Structures are given as structure tokens and as C-alpha cells.
Length: 365
Ligand code: 8DG
Ligand code: MN
Ligand code: MN
Image (cartoon, rainbow, N blue to C red; front, top):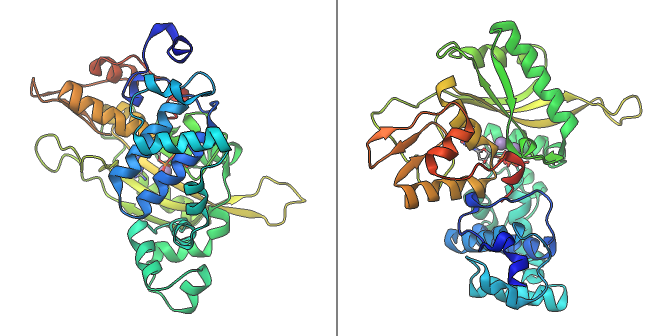
């Protein structure tokens, strides 16, 4: 049985970035249960506990087949006592009572409802919950103070929580590509995020812009966004300027967080419906992230924006703990040699890290 779990006689590697994790796997009921607890722990501000459940789920996603018995867990890394109990319950009864309780709890359900609003994080949702708010109607009726972003999120709540289909992501990408061509021929638009990992649908469209000549990309984004806006394609947007390189030396950029310093635009597009004549309405609101990277940073940006979030977190943890390197979406820095390690492709970044290359479709950790 152990041989079955560890193909080629190898033990499962401890870091998710050392494993291949396909989109579809055989342990869905187990990972769903663990990820519910991870989410719930996140809602309570217990980041460490959340990460432990996420790690356990991620290990199961990398198994080549269904976990049949609890004994098989012995050879797997990173599965704690609590996760083990959850797995046991699901294996024996098909469900875990603790998970079912969480899913039914008022707090979990309300937190989920609120954090699904664009612009609402755990802190805000938690405050609203404490103030006694429970529904979207409560937010409106009690005149809760909302940012412009949250107002847009509430206005388009239904659409933004309807999965974006791949065809919609592709037509969004084409619209951006056409706008980019108007202002900077030769610039490229790359679909990153979950779609690049092969997901058939997602919660948004992540697009990376660059130009083969360093520096030419400066100023592109605001022109593209203004033009799309003038065409009536943009329902909401807020942009952020590039703030990388303003300080000397490498920055871990907040450690566990994925936020970077590229020029970017968080937006909601008004996408013409592809449903044809029978469609109930002519358009759909779709969340789009536009990010601009200078070409020298592009491979790092692409790697960073392809995800999954857990895969990224593990890459950075591996880099720092095992290689004494700092990896972010801008660069890779070797603290032993005190130098930046440049790369022209994702493959080169894996090489610098001494990792076997993991293609995007296998980064669904
Ligand atoms: P989904 O949209 O299909 O639900 O999944 P996803 O595409 O994997 O998730 P995402 O929330 O769109 O994030 C895509 C990747 O972008 C993820 O690995 C994190 C990464 N990312 C960065 N920097 C930043 C940042 O500043 N903000 C956000 N939201 N994501 C970032 O590298
Ligand atoms: Mn995405
Ligand atoms: Mn995104």
C-alpha cells in the first residue's frame, strides 16, 4: 500500500512546490471537509490553524488515488492530529460532524456571505457580524458605511458570485488585447490565475501585461483602462501605481502575503453575454485583475500570479527555509551570495531554486 502512495518508491515530498498537484484528484470529500475547517479557522483569525488544514488538504490532492484507510496516512507529511480525526470521520461515516456543524453555524454562513462581496475581507465581515448584521439587506437597510469598491461588489453580487467561464475569460482577454494593441503594438496580454492552471471556471480573470522592451510598458495601463472605460466596458475600477524599486534591496513583501507592487487595476468589466438571443440579459459583470510587469520581472510575475495561493506560499517558504532565498512576484534574491538571480522563464526560476519544474496544470495545490 505504501508503494501505491509513493510512486517510484519515493515518499511524498514535504513542500507542495515539490509535488505535482492536478486539478482533478480522487479525494474530493476529504479535501472539501478539511478546506471548510481551514476557511472557518481563517474566519476566526486563526491563521496557523487554517494553514494546517490547508496543508493537509493539499497533501491529499497530490495522492495518485483514493485514500482507502487511515493507516495510509502514516507515510504522508504534514497531517496533524485534528486533520487525522476529520479524515477518519469522513472515511468511516461519509461526513464529519464537526464540519457539518460549522457549515450550519450562523457565524460561518454569515462570514461566507459577507466575504463574497468584492472588497470585503475577514476583518470587515467579522465586524459586521459582531454588530449583528446577518444579510445583504441588513447592510443596505442599516446604512452600513461601504467603500466605493464594496458598493460595486454589492451591486453586482449575483454576477460576481456566478463562476466566470473559460470562454468569458478568453473574450475578456481579447478585449484587453485589442485595447493594448491600439496604444502599444508588440505588448502582450497573458491569462494567468486559475485559468492558466487549467480550471474550467474561476472567480475572476487575471491578466498580465508586458512588452519585450523594458520600460515601454510604463503608462500603458491607464491608457488601456481609460479607453475600455470610454467604450462602456468598465463598471468599476481602481488602479494602483507601481511602487517596486522605490527602496533599495530585496523585500520579502510582508512574508506570507502575496501582495506585490506592480502597477495594477482591480476592476469589474461589463461583458457582453455570449448566451445569444435566448439570454436573459445582454451582459454580465466579471471581475478582472490587470497587472503590468516590466519584461525583466515578467517570469516572476507570471509564476506569482498563476497560483494556486497555497502553491505560491509553499514556493516562498521553500525558497527561504531550504535555500535562504527571497522569492516574490518581482525577483529572486540569494541572501548567501547577496545577489539577484535573473530569469527569462519560469523554468529558470525553478532551476535557481533547485526544484523540478512543475507545469501550471500541476500547481493546483
Ligand atoms: P480563481 O480566481 O479561479 O478563484 O483562483 P485563482 O486565479 O487561483 O485566485 P486569484 O485570487 O485570482 O489569485 C491568482 C494569483 O495571483 C494567486 O496565486 C495570488 C496571486 N497574486 C499575486 N499578487 C497578488 C496581489 O497583490 N493580489 C491578489 N489578489 N493576488 C495576487 O501574485
Ligand atoms: Mn483568479
Ligand atoms: Mn485575481
